[in-house]
Image 1: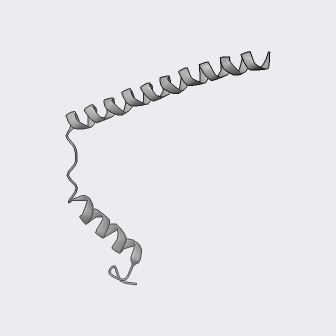
Image 2: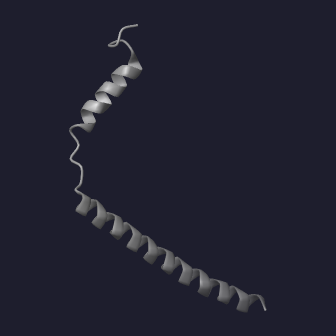
Image 3: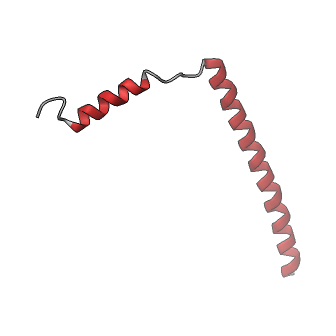
Length: 64
């Protein structure tokens, strides 16, 4: 089996060629986007935590 007929080698070669075309973010951009993701994740977690708290209290009142 030659290198050009090997599907795995062909896949790796074409993948490598495509990765060279990618425009990667700078360190500052990656840090900024990561902080946005963390902040939004914390906000969503807080939102669902508050909703869960009030629904639990409401269910406790209904079941008494």
